[in-house]
Length: 111
Image 1 (cartoon, rainbow, N blue to C red):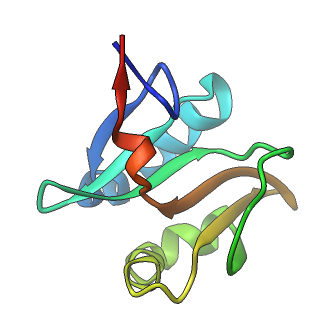
Image 2 (cartoon, rainbow, N blue to C red):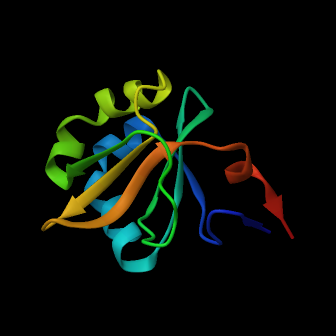
């Protein structure tokens, strides 16, 4: 079974992402893994590799990796409120990951 966002999809609590951001950042960067982020067991966001050809729709905000780490709670709150649709996270001015609202298709599982 696999998710539509990645064959390596895993659900991670927001607090766990915050505490272990370096680990998850490296997994996204090196293996292309995607994570569904949950808050109180409800899926709220996706942390996934940046794909150049993927159309980033809506309000997009770019942040450095350190800014994202420092503002993670605010980023999640702005996603939840619909003020931002996608965060593009950069390392050395190059995009490597996105943090966006979860979509119904992200939760579909196929055989």
